[in-house]
Length: 549
Image (cartoon, rainbow, N blue to C red; front, top):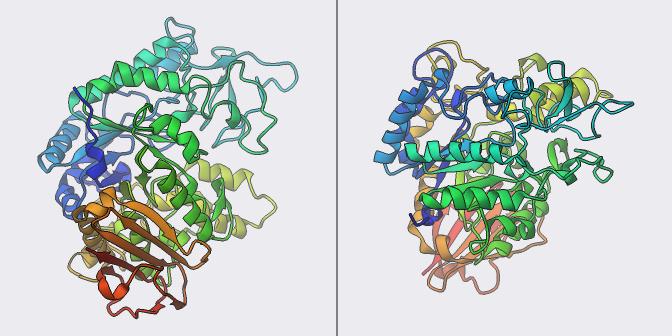
């Protein structure tokens, strides 16, 4: 079967299942809740759903620690519910994409339990090393979540590598038997009818031979030896040729610390092994490398991230566009303004939805959901957040450390979706598994549904517009006023249509004049977030989209 590029015409919606919608009243989001909301997603203009993991899991990392790749967890409704969601989505013309998490498994996976007991053929399914004299640790690598990257296993009598949580041992992808297991997983879901995969930290799966100490990175020690490792392209090509090329599916790789030139080795349409890439640069406009190293927001840094990917990939590869997902705090609380909540929420939508690529909308983003600010660090669920509070920034007061969690924790993106002002935000009729943001009486879908000025209906209009304009699909991207620390202005041009997208990231008024060659008097203003825009002055967080035909 020839693989087509249908994903270029799609808008995807990411569902983090346990917080999307509870359909059976047990307090946990599930696939019955998704089934209930398929028409809502269709009304948003969504063409596809990306599910964060719905597999059986002990829950050490909210489902990213998988104990069975070929089943659906009972708390989400099992395979019966999944088949109904898959059929319901397909009937509505929507694709379904699964999360493929094969850098690591749960330590409760059958493979690990047999590997730690040296039961063949699983003995070398994971990365085991004996203790070294002195520290005992096989090398100096850090995990991304919980201290060092090695944990001693009493049963095996060796250390195992885990680049993330202690309960997430890394698979040994150099073992061909492990790669065959990955292919079985891919075939299982594709044969069931799913349309593709988001591949979790897939650029980490090949580690440097010998697992040497890392003397290059002051933080995240080891990353130089496992990110974009020696056999990464070989293994991805193997998955592509042996499985993916035999289905009309698509793949999108999550790739921390990747830049456009390097990304092209993965996603070049002639030579790559993956269709799109989730890069983190657009999430680093207010931090260094990671959300846990916050800095002052810099619009010029954000613009540089947006534009470098637009320009480098043009004509060679396809962009994945996003400003929120399950791994980052809410974007209005970061790049926008809670004071100018509605205006900045709409402006941020405009800032990325008219770029070239496939947009992803994260659950609750279309409602303008904000960061959560609990009163106690014990209320956080996320393994990374808990570790950060206990082990980082210890020179700060408990209050300052809690405020750091408010700013940095990805749990802000994991509070239940706010469907109404009813008890528990309409998420469940039972007791929710996690805390609901207390602002739900004001920010919820029901309140916005019939309000033509709502963020929800603005997203509907913006998505509809981008789908109706060929220039958004095909046009050349150009950034204007690059030096501005307040305005993000870019144009799209396909020779027949031209767009000018104007976004103010300022909380005060800003003077504006169109770039040379763009006569606003001859343009049609097709989208704005203020009712009566003033040509030469932008209001706080104002957004406009002009069209020339």
